[in-house]
Length: 125
Image (cartoon, rainbow, N blue to C red; front, side):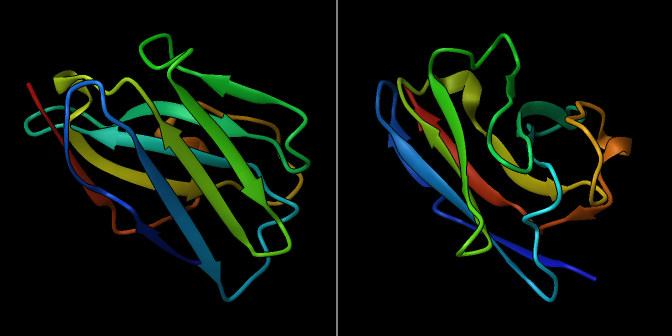
């Protein structure tokens, strides 16, 4: 079972940047797609971005495309989410998640098997 720990969240002003990290342990994630999701208070968890095993393919929600960049370092068993030009509506708990090995990119919460505990991102106006 893979264990995921997110870090890098915090409070930032609108227009600022944050870089989230997702450190995996227990199992290598190099053979699995990784995704980032977020959940604002009172809202459902929503897809943010996903990256394929080799980082060849990346997918973004329309709301973050052009502002966020997902990446991974398989040697470090870690994935990242660089968030630029942050807006107050980006405020949420951000979660990383891993699909089963050998699968393709996904966007649904149910596509992903393992989840971290989340890190809070708050963007002030």
